Amino acid sequence: MRELKVRESYTGDELLEILGPTYDGGDRLFAFGNDEKVVVAQDEGNDNYEVLAVLDKPRLYKGGQDTRTKREKIIDDLVRWVDTQVIAEMVVDHLEEEGDEVTLEACKEAWLGTLENLGSGVGIARTSGEAAHL
Image 1 (cartoon, rainbow, N blue to C red):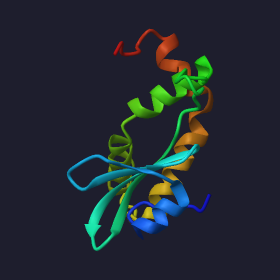
Image 2 (cartoon, one colour):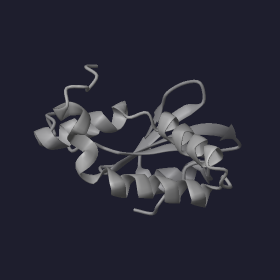
Image 3 (spheres, rainbow, N blue to C red):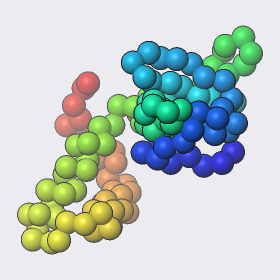
């Protein structure tokens, strides 16, 4: 499948050719999808659509039964739970507090460094009994 980019515009014919049938979500929002992906797009007029999101479709049997493993389901739920806005704000705040120039590349580098250092620290709050119960 050709890769679609968020915030780029495509004609309706391009999206139909790449993804297949559409769903009219009203309010100028549409979902285009195939067996692998669902694309949410907003109608810009003149048969052009801005891609707002590209989502992986969960693997389903024809009867609608979810075929993901327990691990996959938990990861999918966690992905939806993690607030990426908060993470992005924390990375930018950190760079500003350190007096570093805030650029996208600097933010990426800071976040990747955080992930590398996270490693075995993931369970620290849980094992010390300080984890928040949400």
